[in-house]
Image (cartoon, rainbow, N blue to C red; front, side, top):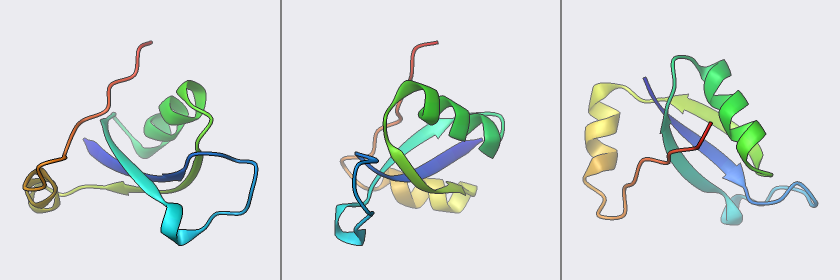
Length: 72
């Protein structure tokens, strides 16, 4: 499944909506997606969204769309 992870780059201060970023990654579950991002980055995860096929197709229309890959 493909997940869209909304995050703040740092955990040092309160989240601000204007600074929320997102990344896309493939994982078998939302828990695995959270674990991958949590162990590979220092991001403050706000929300993880499972993308339907239609939502993924819509996201892929954005020229800056990119799947994030983490090393194990």
